[in-house]
Image (cartoon, rainbow over the protein chains, first blue to last red):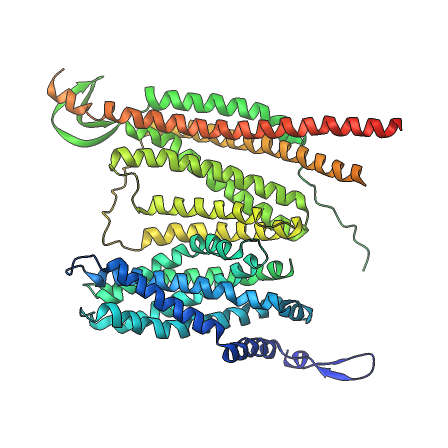
Length: 250
Length: 256
Length: 61
């Protein structure tokens, strides 16, 4: 197997080119995305600012509630609403500039497995989303949770965040590839993305709330929800991976 | 290697055997669902609700509970729900066939199956919601069953919005097929997730007890009737869409 | 009617509008779909007739 992978391709002129392994292709594509981001910082700044603005909107939305409102019960849901809307923004952009600069056509000219493109793109989306969450979650804590005392299991919220973001990045990459070719693509992505990601959202909100509130027997709820979210991740990413070839070459 | 004669897949076309039996199926479906309707109201034993203080003899039986008439909605609610799932399954099947063969005929089939699914999901929502309004006293609650169906409906609507937003027929067909496969996978997950996660806020809806024999028979009549009507509608729509497609092709040829 | 019977049948009359509504709306939805199909069919047939005329004219030329 290893020999085949590293096999040299002899072209007509007798020049030997080493065929890059799938993993190298993946790394190259991923590095391209990351380098582009480091240069322009376009995605991270826009998503970060957007997350902050959503938090400000929450501030206005919750301003008239009574002071005894149990913010802990709601915070899981609010946090995930923030993540869903921020990721919608990010996913929309992730393919837009590829399309604008004709980069996608270039990638498609390379004779390689299309699923590598999917894996690279969803990894870069995942990394950007996680980076934004690293900023947004402490901000959320700072604005809304300092007045109360979250349970000791608060740190466990990192697990549903990671599991959920993996699923969002996976299915979101497939859907944003679809919608980049449609009219009114920004709205289109939301229309497709929100219903399809609903089960994951439901499970993750449940897990996150369980971790934040930490009520009696929260571990059971957390585990069940995480198992379901993980199942969604695995099935949906496999399906997206299989179907990606059709989508990107259409 | 010897040359294998590539068998062209038999394409669904208007006027094939399903179309010949479709009118008969439609009539039988209407008859069966009418019988089911009559059985549901005249024959199937009523479902009992909360107990009352005392007992009363009705038709030779001691009745000690409130008789619920609203349950009669169920006899058509469940068949339309099942038919919508079946239609969604067919849409997914034809989507896979389309992606394998790249023949647009399968895309037409998939799209029409999706339409039928949307129609029956809408029927399920209507019947279910009126039942909810009467029994639970609310128009909407985020109950697992309602939630799953709302999401299913939104996904199917999204499918049609997506198709409308793409101009190239080839690309529209591919994206539609991909989305209908994803939808088919997503719905069971949604079904499981909303049921398995313990909900702390909403009251657990007590499941109704098992069905007695006469209720089962009534349900069978309704199920068979609705399924046949669904099939007949599908074929009818298919014939119409095929005719429209042929007209379009002819128009293009004449313009040349 | 004795009070027990009244209680037994207490939900039937209030639930009537909802049951009738459910059945009527369901069949209306199905009928609307049939109507949409029929309108499409008529349109396609009319266009077919126009096309046939166009073909006949072309033949005559």
